[in-house]
Length: 616
Image 1 (cartoon, rainbow, N blue to C red):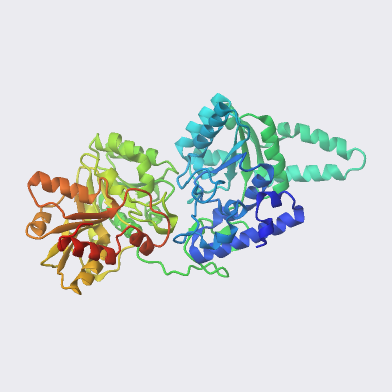
Image 2 (image 1 turned 180 degrees about the vertical axis):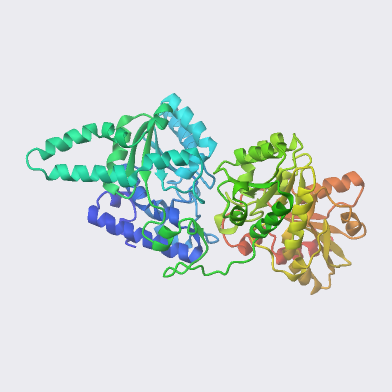
């Protein structure tokens, strides 16, 4: 990459040929970095020209650009001063895979969740108006973000208030899984990228070539094309919300986008610019399978094959068991929020197509709809990542738990998420779930415990949550653990470490280090957090007790056990090892655990110090 081209000022001096070469280089750099570190590939390849056009048409920092979700900002990072560090993408201590305000002033927010960009941008516009500052604000969102209700709250407010906000709708027909819902069908009808965009280009090009009358006819066509467009598409949806609609526009034509962006600035009113892009543009494997190449582990560029062999996953195991349960029961259904692939529920859809409901990026709706299914006599299973289920907190509390409805939540990606970072860590699960009255909480160690928890939940009459990371642990002690609320994995005479779920792997490693120093540490895995099983109390009655969890300390397992022990007159834990208050960064799991003091060496040293009368 030529550093002299990698900034907004240099972009403005490039001609068409130079811009095409730059876009090709940007794609090559994105593919190279993601092939080494993993990341969001298809979405970023589809927004190269879009980002280049944005930075040519607008002036940073006077103008403000917000990417919804922020996973499509790789080109933006490369062009706003982070090109030298781009190969550190998603590595510990390197660049984030999302927008991150700690990295650059060009990133206004640290992002990672969908459908909030319009609301954030509306606040920025109003702040400008209040302070008397000049400039323009742009919210860039994919069509998948419009499956989330918060986008409509923002659109409704902005259109009603007449705020001069520019909303760029990047329409590639997908979010992660294929987009679903009425709006997706509406956009498909509006898109007509092969029809309207192609016809417009052909007519304009033909008119320009006509001698004498060509230029006047072209001028007339330009002034009348909005009326012509209405013969091809219907754009009254955004107009009814108070927005001027411009599009659909070819999202891979830099010159056309620049022109449209400047027109939107001149309008000085709520404006939606509808761009049509191709997810995975420029890399054949991603173009052919954009869902597979949405978020990828390291891969071989030549073939597109992953470098890592797929490990056994909780979600896929859960789906296989749910298929069996449905065959036996006949009343089971699965609800997910644009994550049927990530949660492993694609297999359930294949086996029971009429009983999987993918509602798009709408977690609140997913939870309340599951409540309605339960109230209607079905047995719903709601499969959502931990970090995204947070958005359905009120619905879990009011629509599920208050109603005492037997909805089962499969809480995927529990614990540290690794390279996805702060917005995706599932480290608040226990804190927000244990608040829920009547909610049963499981942390299975293996397939047998997972299927047992599913069976117990489906046969019960209360809400339940089964929390697990993506991959099943391969530690032999965990793999062999029987289904029980509390399982002793290692005997020990001097102290006992109670571990919440699969982080028991770290506990066992710490026990081995202590054994080398003559300390016999017992290790037990607690696999049912709420209600706590009575089997815990004999374990801590005559030995110092410590707790270990991959959750923030506030509201987590350690606090819960301490409070329950105090109520029952049992010995309190000597220390509760948990994640500190805050948002861990991104990186490999081993580095993140070490940074949080949850690596075996730090745990062992801390226990040794406390057993010897010291303080942490």
